[in-house]
Length: 194
Image (cartoon, rainbow, N blue to C red):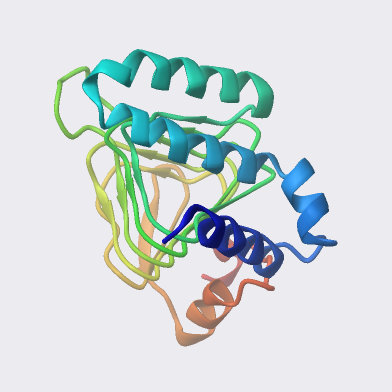
């Protein structure tokens, strides 16, 4: 995709996910989640060139200062990723995020060890992570799953599941829950539909 088509796709995605969205120009100017993902994309390209890893980290720290969102430039993020509100989001270096993923403010995709190698979560496609959730370690959250607000997830979550609580309890998602989770105009915490 070209830079312009990626920007358009991100703006369209923001409109689809946020009922308060009033237009592309306003969204481009005030949505910290968009600013963070755009900065991440540049930093990720720099990170791919070992000589530019230092500047990539500086860029992400500057973006963190401006937006309150910290995305390590080594993370891998798919298309149509949306961060709603954003403040306090942390995404670690080895995190992998699929397409059409939405996360809310205060989410951490973090590690549980100081070992080198894969130590952050992998989120499949069409995953929703509720506000304040902590997804920790080299685990996998399967496609079409949801993590409830403030859940603490430390084990794999199978596809089409919902994880809620501390520690998170995993259940299969019902058809009704899947419909609500896929519809970007629905903003109801998945934990309410257990």
